[in-house]
Image (tube, rainbow, N blue to C red; front, side):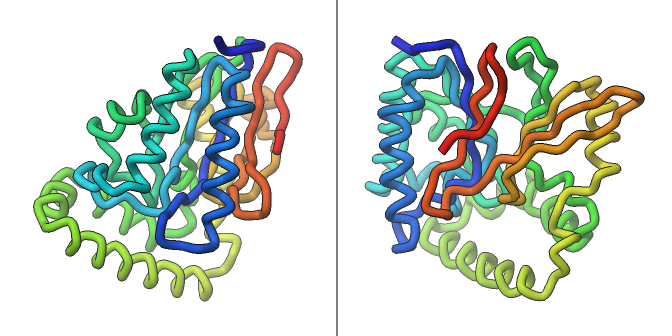
Length: 246
């Protein structure tokens, strides 16, 4: 059974069977699920578990089956697993959730974590200075676009995603770094609207913690790191305190 009652938060693993650079990340993740994750009561994945997700009909892919089975084994061990989709894997649906034994979270979601009212997000909607990205996000998150896209053959969808990924990487190289980070005013406004005392998010890959003053309250924002720096980044929230662990 799970151990000490702590919660773990991770994001931005970008798992893929087709990128040789992620092989070590996959190994670390599977060891994490079999080790540290089993000592927690809850694991929350805040987006971009996969580098991309073309639709739940891709569950038959052996790599995807392997990841879903590993997650389900953790759930069978008694650990609650929540999953929020990110900007890369936003097409994950109920079929994957069932296969992996996870519960899908809305973005944003609010939860009591260690007695603290906490806002959970992937984080991309906080990057409001990147207007081009926000327009693209609104387009691909629309039910009409998703319905039309998922109606196309799987192989065709994968080719289209690869094209979009290549375009995105090119655009990121010429965008100022500042506009790809969160907007402080957007953070404050959202925490105020949810009356949250803490925020946990990923997306920017800039692991760290920050204090935001919200109506006279010192609220902490925790940014989850990615898993591609020869380590796995996780935030452990326990009664004794919150902190990052590799």
